[in-house]
Amino acid sequence: MGVFAMPSLGSDMEAATLAEWLVRPGDRVRRGDVVAVVETQKGAIEIETYESGTVAELTAEPGQTLPVGTPMAVIRTDGAAEAGATPPVETTPRPEPEAPPVAARPGPVSAGQLRASPAARVRAGELGLDLAGLAGSGPGGAVVLADVEAAAARGAQPSAPAPQVEMRKAIAAAMTRAKRTIPHFYLSETFDLQPATDWLAERNAARPPEARLLMAALFVRAAALAAARVPALNGHFTDGAFHPAPVVNAGLAVALRGGGLVAPALGDAAALDLDQTMAGMRDLVARARAGRLRGSEITAGTITVSALGERGAEAMTGVIFPPQVALVCLGAPKLRPWVVEGAIRPRQVATVTVSADHRVSDGRQVARFIEIFADALAHPERL
Image (cartoon, rainbow, N blue to C red):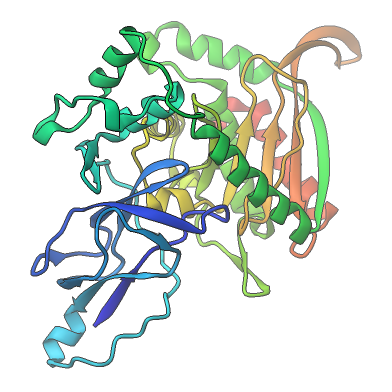
């Protein structure tokens, strides 16, 4: 037998509300199957099982708020079923291995008697609307995005302070803990981005808008290649020790429209080409903002990349997402005078800042990471 427990979906999560079971007793499940939806301050998250077997019992009810580690279900594992054994159930939650991301389930979510799609919940949160006061037009009377938009168009008034205030509190608490417990140090370098800018413009010229690459994809790809070559920056610090990751799962810092931040992971990013990287980023960002991420995507990141985009500050220094040990921040590209072959010319430049955990790495390793990162963008055709 195995216990399916409420997983931790980030250092800022202490508990979550079970919104919906997607399985029933007697159902067969495989490792990586989505079995439930939980509501967190980051939205509706689909959570998976990490064992194959048969659902023996559901011990938690939709609508319950459960601390991390609370048993939610009992799964009769395949090994136990074959042996005919029924050993005592261990209630201590085990570390969850990563499961590969798959497409998310778009259906409605229920919490107690309230049914609403994840997209409707996210939009209602942005507007500060109470879902309980809306009539649903979806399956089984579920409130869908169109119902929320219609209510907003009718001038429905917010019934309470928007929930992003609570998310901001949770983020603040998590980042305070991270800053207090992780001995951060920082290295920065401004580098010539003109080769990548020119190459990207040429590459996108013949492409339709939906197939064009963004500079952020080059940043993520370069960071993934650098992390693969500097393993001291790629992994997790847990139980007092560093555990390097076998692959680079690049976390993407995504700003949510209603406020707050999530960092879902792009799995095995070093093995993806630029088009695959761009497609994966578009998918993650869209689902993050619609509240349709999976639990493994929230927890699998081994290094995170945060970019300000085309507008914003010239440089940014961030706080590491525990249990990761490094964060790569990119300021907005700027046109600056730059020395090229002994002459001063106008060039697009960008500043990269790496926040690193001094328990694991030192300045030499981070400098090597930055060198590889900048060199990759100086030769974008190799990406």
